[in-house]
Figure 1: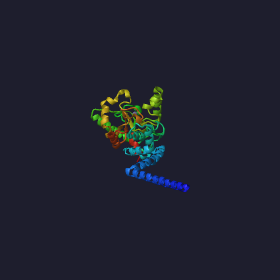
Figure 2 (figure 1 turned 120 degrees about the vertical axis):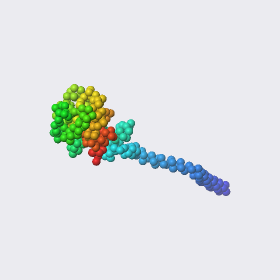
Figure 3 (figure 1 turned 90 degrees about the vertical axis):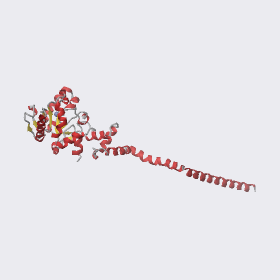
Length: 307
Ligand SMILES: [Zn+2]
């Protein structure tokens, strides 16, 4: 009998414990539910679910890139083919704005000068680009005409592209009407001439310095016959302070000429400010560049190479 009652008591206790357990668990769950704590449960779960793909993406660099990509795509001069280079350049230069990143990469500034160079596309006609990434062959000689003494004061460099020359004459004549005297001192320069000039500068100033103001042979815009150094080619002349320069700033674009190496654009063009160096690009392109203030490098990348 005693054993039976002990068993009964034991069963009864088990039932009570189980019932209490169920009631407690049920009550607690109901309490949490009504209190809204089930949100916490989902919140506890959500971050781990959300974080996980994020973490995976971070390894592949997509989450930051995704938002940066969206910002980059809003830039007016965004070029789809340059996306990976924009992102890499931004990563290496996190303080640069999206506009600067697009501007620099379009101009190839993410590459060292004189690397990744390609032959200039001769099909571009007078919109041909020659710079530290686009070069001409040693045998390239453009169509040239001899300039009249009225327009040229340097016998050694008196040849120019015929289309550029026509507009150069118009510009010089128009300037004369405003009592402004303009003349060429250096238009076409052959590969061999440029080679001699550049090597002389290297011998005088060293290669690093020479590269900031003189082009290596094949990389000079003067080999296109489309450029002219007007009145001077020396920074010590301070042409930028002259009335001739002021006139060119106001008017050269009307005749299709642009200031090719502007002030504060050295980081894009790769050349020191050259207030005397003008390049024929045609009236429409010159007007656009005059109005927007972009360099020919940027114009070329977006409107010519990208089309
Ligand atoms: Zn020049």
